Length: 97
Image 1 (cartoon, one colour):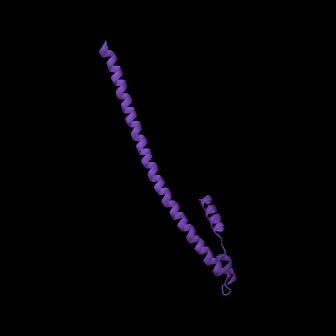
Image 2 (cartoon, rainbow, N blue to C red; image 1 turned 90 degrees about the vertical axis):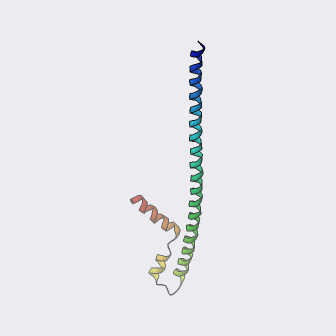
Image 3 (tube, rainbow, N blue to C red; image 1 turned 120 degrees about the vertical axis):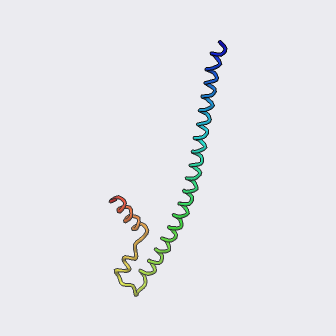
């Protein structure tokens, strides 16, 4: 009689231990994946900031170019695109794809 009661309890303990271990492993994997994603996110933010600075510098250069008296009018108008104009053009292109 003790053997019959002991076996289900042992099986329940083993099953519970296995479930706890598997849950721990999944949680550890999720934590590692989240840490990697945070590292990638920070790297992408740094890259975006760098690109924004480059675009800002390019815009300033284009503004300077477009206001120079020796630049033809059509070139000056083309050079006067703002970042918002470029974003609208890109978004329209992405929507068409």
